Image (cartoon, rainbow over all chains, first blue to last red):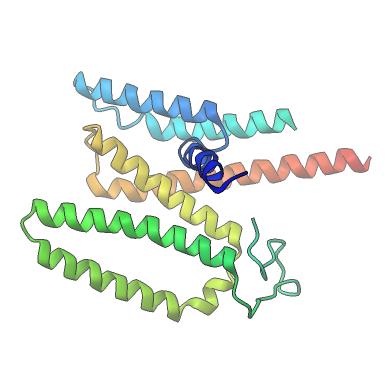
Length: 70
Length: 149
């Protein structure tokens, strides 16, 4: 594989692992949670309480899914 | 990935430090420092420029660089003895706490206790992580017992 192809493959791969990590479902849920927070704040609800508990719950879900898969 | 000359399995008997140049460790350190350095540069320039105080902002950033470098050099020995997994836990908890705080503040959220909520987030995520570690250890222990019987 040439150096150019290696870079073309490696950069998106790095970005995926850097942004998404090892669980796509968690990444999607957290992006949706951030979007939901933005929408609720725009509608006058100070939803600081949404993301932190959801992050913990999704970590538990991710660990549980990995445990089931193993 | 385990850098050359280091062992991820823990225990002082197995720990050894290579005296040769470790390209993997150098590359990882370069990536980490570049990423954080870029972040600091953006913060220093944006905060300094928005306040019309770019000079003092650069001086403060440079002083912090020297201070952190000096503290890192002074604490090199003790830090090498800290288990890597513990460092990952601490750094991960801090990044998650600061990330949550700034991301939500960027969305317009007003934190009830203002900046003090960073500490509460640290405690919340830290205790959650410790709970998950306990559950994972118990599950692994139970799985090992099933294999043995």
